[in-house]
Image (cartoon, rainbow, N blue to C red; front, side):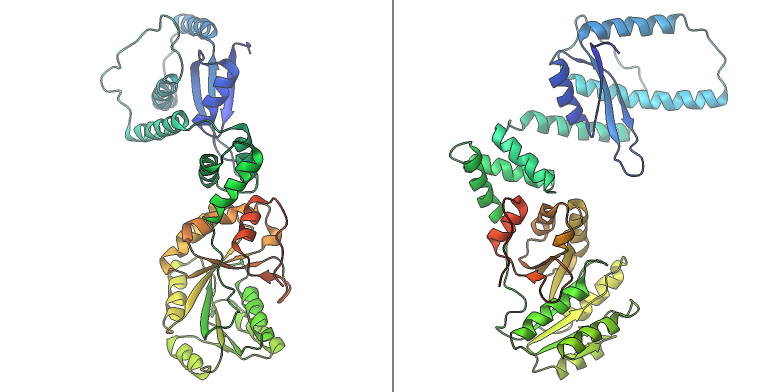
Length: 405
């Protein structure tokens, strides 16, 4: 391919535009665009072909000559259908190219043609163009970050933080920092992040009688986390009782009973509201009652269990999420459980997390204190109640997070 004509592929139009500007400069002309399917494990991408004005003019003349001397042929039904599909794609691409050209200098002697009647963009094309306009406007209005801030932004993204949250935090840090040096920006970033994560009191600390129900998706370690909470309370000399309302999983009550036997605390199974109320009444002198629930893809099943826990006066819900999940998955979990209004957040599987800063997605959207973090299977060793500075360091990854005694 000529050095003057280049093809760029990026996750979205904005990044493609940035690459074109860097490679060809502001005089580049958009020749073509298409969406590239990513397959099962990759996202779709946008492919844009661009050139300098001279190359675009040559390419356009060659295309015109080829069309002029092409031999006419009788179209079959299949060819007609394919041609109509191609026309629809060209309709979108033509409108897309027009939007992209707004960011570039038009080529010399560019001809303008009125759109024929009846070829107005469809609703789906207009929606796509609206999204593109918003992306272009954001790119134009966003101020350029200092090099030290760009490096910090890349670091946060590598830690697994959502780009929107990371960019907002970096922008705030740039505004607060007295000087745009790496140490000054890091100090300001810590202040900003400290306002976005909140640490809470450890659930096992005794101050009054507590009833806590753990909710969350399947596989995040709710039952093991419940056992860790109970073990810490027992270690502090408190009376503890374990209850499960999980009647869905095979062996759920046996697992809870096993933990109860090891810690020498009573364990119960409640199948309905009456049974749960009777069990709680029997445990009137217990300092900490922990209630286990089942993770389920069925929202109605989750709602039913949450309402069962809420039927007990003074009961709280703690949402348990796995840090090993990505930021989008964590955000989706929070959206699924937000309507249940959990009072606290517990992070699990920190030891399995490739991108630990992803937990900001859950913390930011739920706006509830983080009261415990787990990082292993050992009971009760692999759980701690972090402070806000420790959570900030977990986001930044500047130094190891220290353990509470």
